[in-house]
Every structure is written in structure tokens, then in C-alpha cells.
Length: 326
Ligand code: NAP
Image (cartoon, rainbow, N blue to C red; front, side, top):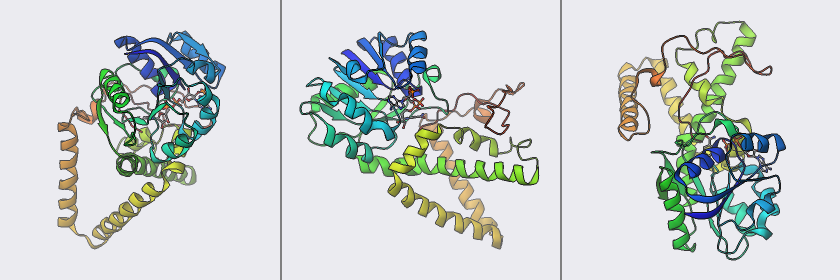
């Protein structure tokens, strides 16, 4: 499908693309570039590409598809390194979780003749780095592309086919619409998870209570989302501020309504709401975006106990699977 694919950044998403492209034979050459030499060596040891270099400009030389797979906060810096070496006619894309900001940053730096088609695969996990990726991460997941109206439709079709070949269902939409939809389906839920886990961690420290010990009763599911990459999520909230605040406003209004139901003992009101929300989950399962397996398909043998990193409180159980997007 492509002669040379360059991946800039080779973490969870970049390495998953590399694996899937290799498996499906979608590019003759895969060039990999990243910031740290340890990460590059890890990618080399995993055999993710054909060319490995710390020089992003060298990596994009002659590439007909370049995908930015770094946190969005470094796009301007990366564009400064590569813009003069991008091949005319090349497709430049990305996988960033916000799209309006990305377009604002990249468009002024775009050389003539390069087709810029922003993208966002709605697929991921809470893990990071080259070893975290896997080839079927994108299978049966959505990938949203947000090309401007004047972008060459042939280039858009090529990228749609590329993501289709990785197993994704592809949809094109306006960047502002993407950011609003993702604010409520992904960004605000992450904010809520970060907040509740932070509150519980503080409570545990303050009161020496047993919240971690009894965490399986609901809280545990938030901890998986709240374990997502801190740099990536910092950048999401720095760059999709308006849509997140809009959706957070709605969320807080609804939370106040629910708070009142609890305070006044409005049983029928709560039951009606919880019945509607249960139906939402069923429709997500019907749409094939979640498993119907009991307890998210968790094995019910002995949980895997992992030693926590030194700077992290002892959340002792590591979950697998999940399909977190961004
Ligand atoms: P990740 O596993 O942390 O990988 C990020 C990669 O970017 C690493 O290889 C890192 O390399 C590299 N990088 C960081 N700064 C760089 C720089 N200045 N120059 C070159 N490379 C640099 O992150 P990820 O989960 O793959 O996320 C990457 C992008 O995908 C983000 O924009 C995120 O919004 C988007 N996304 C994530 C998910 C998800 O669930 N994780 C889902 C969809 C989209 P070093 O180790 O060398 O610093």
C-alpha cells in the first residue's frame, strides 16, 4: 500500500501500527524514530521496523506516509525537525486524541504539496511504550479522520484504506465535532477517574482506611482508566479545554440533580435513570465495542500481584485487556 511508512514515536500506538503493518504487509519499509535512544533500542530489539534513527528528518526522507505517534504537546517541535524533509505528495497524519488543536499547530507549518490528514484511532490501553503494542489493537475499533474539505480526496481514500486494512472502521468528520464527542466519551470520563482515584488515595493516606483493600467493589474499574499515561492526558486537557469544560458543565448539572435525588430519597427517579444507563451499556455491547463477559471477562482465579513502582501507592491488582481509548 505504501513504499515507506515513517512512525514518529513508537509507544503503545506507534508500535501497534508497526506490528499490524508488518503483519498485513502494508508498507515495504517501516522507518522508526523517537526521542530517547533506550526507546529506539527497545523498538529495534522487538523488530518493529527496518530503519531506526533518532534523527526525525532522516526518518521522513522519501516516506510516502508519515504518522506522528507522540504526545500532541510535542507536535510543533517535531514539525520543526521534519517539515523541510517531507516528500511532496506524501501523506502526513497523526493519532492524537484531540484534533482541533493539532490542526491549528500543524497547518501553518505544512510544506506545499504534503497532504495533511489528521487521525485518531479510538483504541488503546492504559499501558505505554514499544512493548505495550499489539497488532490487533485497531481491529473492530473506530478510527476518525478529520481532513479539511480541500484535501486531495485520493490521499484521503488511501488513508481510509490503510486504517481499514489495520481492521478499523473509518469515519471522516469535522475536527470540532470530533473534539466535542471525545470530550464526553473519553476525556471527561478520564477526568472523573483521575479525580475519584485521587480522592480515594488521599482518603486512604489521611484515615488509614481500607479503601484499597475493598477496592473491587467499583472503585477498581476507575483505577484502570486512572493508570493511563500522565503526559498524554495532561496534553489532552491542555489542548481540548473548551470542549472538556462544556461537557464537564453538563456533567456537573446532572450530578447535582442526582445528588438531590439521593438527598430527598427520590427512589423512582434514581431507578428510572439507572434503567436508562443500563440500556446504554447493552447498546455498546450490541455495537461490538465491549464484551458482555461477566466482570469484563476478568479471570476469577488468583489475581496477578505486581510490585508497585516506588512513587505509586500500592494498588496491588493489575488488570489485563480493556480497550481504553484515549
Ligand atoms: P506512549 O506509549 O507514551 O508513546 C509515546 C511515544 O512518543 C514514545 O515513543 C516517546 O518516545 C515518543 N515521544 C515523546 N516525545 C517525543 C519527541 N519530542 N520526539 C519524538 N518522540 C517523542 O504513548 P501512546 O499511548 O502511544 O500515545 C501516543 C499518541 O497516541 C498520543 O498523541 C495520544 O493522544 C494518542 N492516542 C493514545 C491512545 C491510548 O489509549 N494510549 C489512544 C489513541 C490515541 P521516548 O520514549 O523516546 O520519549
